[in-house]
Every structure is written in structure tokens, then in C-alpha cells.
Length: 254
Image (tube, rainbow, N blue to C red; front, side, top):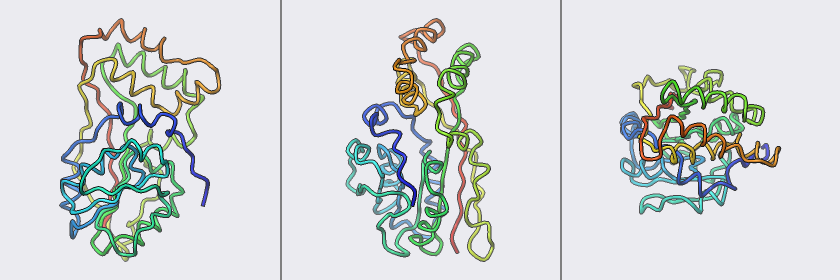
């Protein structure tokens, strides 16, 4: 198994504070597609935002992350158990979960090993779901600042895996296309939005792995200048609707 690529532990606290949330209806739809709702596994849980939402629909949720610092920042919930474990070796029993979820993290995994692990732990009728979001859309004036920052300022410092979220995981060979094994699920289109002040958005951008690597490589922080340029179109006291394209891939094991 490949070594864990830890891009987020050093910013675990900021990650927990600034990352956007996913639409609540997503969890309801996924629970409805499962044969049972006894147990879910939220893999690469990060700050636990998906795990806590899943606990509204499942009796218990096991939430794992390879980063101990991320687990330390996770949201407590009486039906969620957090553990440090890589995606490819969950420690869960065979045929023990009804849903496996991966929120904005599948591109970091050794995917063939993870998919085998998901097959192992899923019960018959269980669902594997992975979702990802791409670059934001806010207003034309703001987008004209964000896009070159994303592409040019920190673009050279993005890990190579970043191309996968940008394409909505289209090139990933997702499981359950084989009719003998399972079926791909057709899901509704989901909207991912947030009403944010500029400080919220800049805090989110500061958690990008490309920003972290840019700081390390150049010895300078690109965020203050980015914030200054945004301020011309986004006053401190005003909110803007931030939109992300959200893509969900899901399949059910027979």
C-alpha cells in the first residue's frame, strides 16, 4: 500500500473551521438507496462533517481518517465513532456496513485497494458513494480574481491528484459497473452552496493543499494579496452566494 499523502494535518483546525458543507438532502437520498441503515462508514472523514450528517439516518457511523490531527478536530456525536485508519485498511469486519462514503477525498487513495476494501465491508444491498466538487463560482468580477489565483498563482503547487476533482472523477473506473457484481445508481443533481462573508471564503482558500505547498516552496503567503484584491469587489460586511459544482458517484453491491 502506498504511503499516506498528508496534505491537511498541519491545517486541521482551519480545515474544520472553513470547509464548506454538503447539501443535507444528499445524505437522505443515499440512506434511501441502502437496503438497511444500521451502520455507515465515512472514510477520510476529515473534520467529521459528513459523519455527523449520516448519523441522522444510520444507527451508528464509523468515521476514519489517516490523519490523527484531523480526527482530533472532528465533531463529537453520540452515534459516531472516530478512529485513525487509512482508507485502504479500515479495520471493519467483513459484510458489516450498509453505506461507505468518501467526501472530496477519493483522489488521494490507492483506489484499487480501497475499492476492494469497500467491497469487503459492504453488506449485500450496501452502497458506495464518493463525491467531489470543483472550483467555485461567485460573481464574474470575483471569479476573474479567483480563477487566475487557482490556476496561475498556486497552480504549479497543486498535487497531481487535483486533476481528478476538476474533471468530476470522470476518469476513475468506479466499481459496480459489472452487472454480476452490482449496479451504478442514478442520483438527483445536488447543489452545493454557501452564503459567506469574504473572510469565510479566504479562510476556505487558505486550506487548499496548493496554497500550503506554495507557502512551503516560496517562503511567502499568497493569501494577503489575494484577500486585498477580493476586497475591491467584496466588502467585509457583505455576503456572497458561493457555488461549487458537486458530482456524486454511487453504486450498490448485489
